[in-house]
Length: 140
Image (cartoon, rainbow, N blue to C red):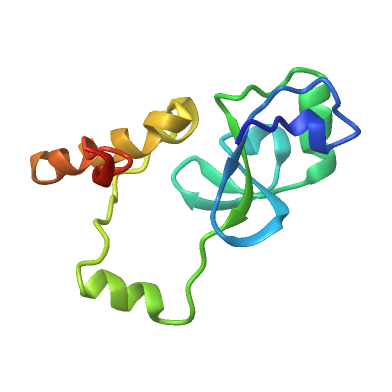
């Protein structure tokens, strides 16, 4: 999105961290992932060194004191969700390409526009052509 976190949270009005779209579910809710468990002392580890959520007060304090950077934290509005067993079924049907090599650099340092492309390229040559699909194939 073109929205910055400082536009949504009164406690950090000057913060210019971008907000990304996490998915179509609960778009009225704000979520975050981070790599600073040492600083926030909270969050659920979803991949090595990548944490979902955490102590919001510590997060605000870390932002106010410039102790955390956009390369260590990403905000999302909404999320993508599945019913019980739905995602497993879709994976078995090969509806998804599963990336098991998560790393902080891809998640936090990647450009929002290029993150998906970089993740697809990371799957190997079999998927490289998908990374270069135009956004609107019908317009080509």
